[in-house]
Length: 381
Image 1 (spheres, one colour):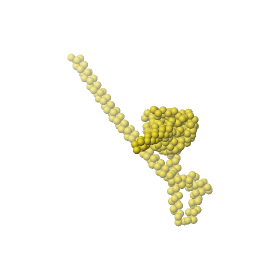
Image 2: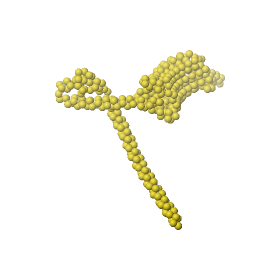
Image 3: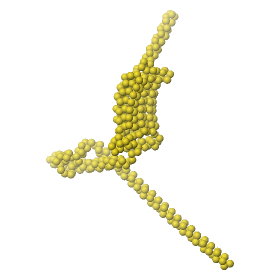
């Protein structure tokens, strides 16, 4: 009986050893890579890889995959290494990244996707990652970044966007990067129109707080080509204000015409035949067809009638304009009050100065008379 128990114990030891051996083999270093078990670094650079290597040790903290031929990242591509902190995928041929490619990498701090062929990033890509501090997306073909991705970049200290195809950048995305220390934006075809005023304002605040940025050179329009956005005076954006005013007045005109048209239509409900004739005429006038009168809607406004969002835009624009006018009025009033107060103070100062001069003159005259009297008395004596 005792011998049987000893044999059973020996078999258990052999089984445990076999399992440990299989486990170690399952996480052996891939043959294309160099692994350092002490530093937990896996180096797979320049090996001509077309995919992420398998059988990576789960304790891997740094994975270098640059200078390969990887073309895409599938869902949970790095599920074997959940504790990786540095992931370098630069200088590959990556054109697509699954929204869940980085799922599970909650400790990722540095990610480089530079020198690839990315055209866009899904807003969900960095969703579960909150520890990312360094993101390099330079030398790609990105047309833009989704504004919602900013929620995942709140702890970012460096963002590289140089050498892409960016023409504008969402200001709400930038304002979410409250810990950003450095930003690269050079070599993008920035379109310096009204849409880029938000970036210019953000850059001024960012630089004032000590942030570092390289340059934003305008590519369009032609009159601003090769000019640094930070040095472009605000006077060159006056057309944006004029456009806003034209938009406001056009919407007000459109709303007034709609109100008149609705009132006329409601007034003709008792006369179906008249209503049936007038509406097609109004529509014909709106589209420029045979109306001939000035009372119809402008050519583009029947299309706007199907978009009620214009009403909200018009109301919002009127409110904003009213607020701006109110602020300007208050500033002018404050300036007038300040001017009046300053004038009163200066007048009082001048009066006191004149009074002091007259007093000094009177005292001087008294002293002169006293001296003259004294000298006369001395002469008589």
